[in-house]
Image: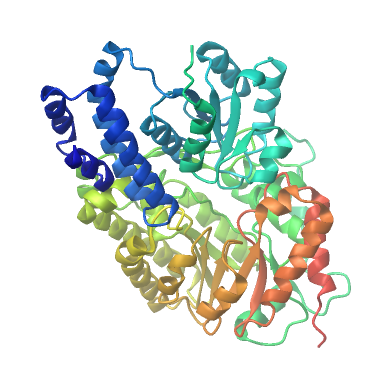
Length: 212
Length: 369
């Protein structure tokens, strides 16, 4: 399964679906492919990103390869009743149409075995609340790229608190204009300087739990 | 919508600001000429803030050249800072090439952003034509704005993006990043098209207003190291950006203000190879140390920066004042000159007192002529 690992790390998308299919045909267990190859390979990619050896282009091609590999595995994983790391809800806040940060977080969480509900961009506080009520995630991620839209994150946290949902979901925030102080000020649980930090935080609270 | 809208008859002629010895235009001209100045100039990069300051919605600075000009000029006169009105936004190019840009409307407070890119595939790159710089997208409004700059005798500028940010605005950052790795020729072709378009627009401005007094502003946030590696910057951005600057300067333009936004430390060795003019102005974000910028560019360029915009919008007034003073002290002895500038656009909802404190810091650090 080394070849599959290298394809993820190098971002080789062409042929990856065939490679996964080949391994399944050889009798490899879907859960093993996910947990012993795909997730560790994405972890390596994440490490290279955090060390400053990989940047967005490398992260994106690896994540794309990972997603295509996962698409082949998902039906098998479902058949086997293999649960993921948990469920996450992610969106870019109201007034902000930038999606790169959010998309990277989605890819990183999926690469770590999370089921991700992607709300898209320009997401209102009401929509975040509704999504948390419906999907019962263990973590909710908000992204904002603009200093003009980051203020709406406070409204979202307040809405989640008011709906009595904060005890069941951790709120993480990220985006270029944010910092740890701001996250604390608005009542968020975590500020992630990049998508890998967000993924690691989600993992830390997952601890093997899974969403209902 | 506000009912107390300002009109052009509200504009007074420029005089000296409370006890100063130079007007803003004299001060900026002196910095560019390497002459003595009474104090460090301040460029606050304030568009939305200016609109709200005079009772306009933020949307007005993008949709209405006259209101945009009035709002900025009145705010400049009120606070006595030195950046003349300008018109631009980082999402430039999407609309001009046939895509769709979301411009703020009503009382919504945000900058324009790209929502539908004109380039969706490699085939789109191959067949992408250059838009007419007189008619495409928001360029007619930009031309109208520059005519106001000329009529009023304030600095004439054209604000565009750098080659990489324009390419991002044509196809989206994810697609371009993937092309850098998997389709480098396509990426290069798109960057070349971006450079050609920027040159077309600058050429039109030089023909319309003359090159000598024209300030060309090129904003390049997308090429930051939070997006691409210095290796990709060297291979893809540097050749196109350098050639573009050379061609702009060949038109007779004297000064390029290059806003290299965000985390660009690893790109600095390459940016320093890009000619900026005589002198150019290099605007840095708070992620770049002033000392590093002076080392890289200080012999050829005026350094502008690097007051953190998040701080301006969120910190206490005293913190803003102290940080502004620290920026001034760090930059004021740059060999070719220094302009205090915010790292990026002053947030529209910046507390006015915070904004005042930056201006106070500038005046508390007067030079002694």
